Length: 571
Image (cartoon, rainbow, N blue to C red; front, side, top):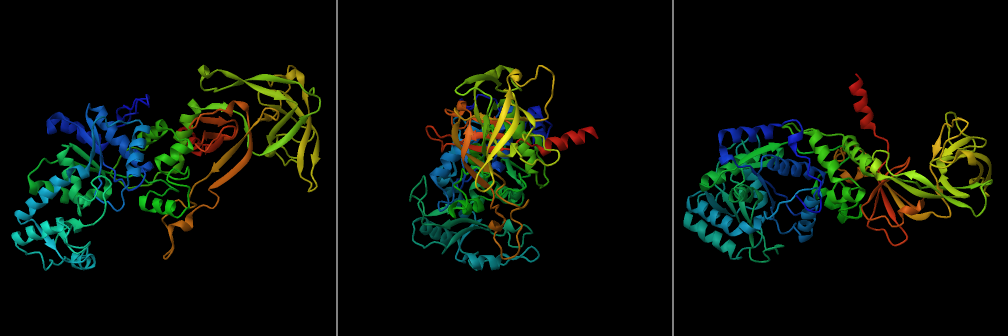
């Protein structure tokens, strides 16, 4: 457990079972792995973690914790051209933020480079690997297709001695990048393309973020992955479905080497509507300046959604709700948002903020007078108590809360109509002031002093309650309104010749620079989440400065998914 996050992760034990959990239960019954449960989370440090990784973290750490086991954090850092220390640091930070702790079990595939090299030599000596001079393009041609067998490389039958010599010269840096590879000698006619003499090592003269220039040959992911699991004595190697066809190759390597054999189990990866999960494409957005960085609140990265105000508790609850299966599908973004709202509704303090201010003058309120009114901090949590909100003669309300010529069914403020000011008084519009363009810039009203606290002693009712901020006491802040980054449910679904960026939403961000906030928000801490009454959930952004808070809208209040669930339960 991460000491900085005292809330215990919501482990799978509290939810319905799933097929992976059932496998582990069976293994425990039969004594397989001597009753151990040891999982691992093995990200490649070539980008920031995204929402899809949250499901894998929940599954790996959750299952191990349920059965008294352990989980390793291992960086599969076998590609120095794409990996950076920045990504390593971010991944560790996000694992802890989500509520999980690898304790002293932090590993890197690069830790195993000497052992992997020794195993490669072992396979050469047993005639199971050879050095190949085919180019990448030639290798593709020789590989065959799903319906046609591949062709053997002309270098496949080199002697063991020649292969050992060439591999050692590759290791010594004698050959340029891409000129030679080390390949496993398996079966060029296999129905599984991954078994058609896959590449084990390639030449790459590149600086590694941990090993520097010690190596100029690097193991392929498929060669390093299973053996790394073996070294760490992982019991249940949990992978997403795209690795199912790679499992026979992982099995072949550990069987040929005669080493400890973990059990690989595949599950469905998380796919969300209106969300891009490819790290390569997310990197493209960052590098091309189409977002403000990996932690842009519109990004599906854990850093981005944390900055937007999503909570780790909500993400864990969401993962538990969607479950685990062997069927690839897509989850509605609305379900994730529902769990975020459900969590924030319980924990977020209520405050008042006016995003698009309209000035209101209460003509019969004494000039120079001010008072403090009691406001509830969170109706869902009585222990949150109340706060004092200043009230004065001049207020700000939302522009949308006034109409000079109201349409039918509009019950908010308009000439001659009475409304309730939240926690304050009944207010009636008397007149307006317009600018030279005919736009209403100031509304003059009267108030009923007998309705302090928002209730009329004579029992009369009003049809609308609106929020407000005292102009004299208001704090000015910036508010960033976020929408989906993409306009299409499947952002990758584009016409031939088009790039996925054609589906970017041009209206995914609106910045309001003159919002009026109640004074309690002046010293709000970065990361703190609030519910702006009637407007939605908002989170304090790190861009905040002294005297100028910046808020990101996490989500509006509307929860379509909750309404769907209520409707379905009623059927």
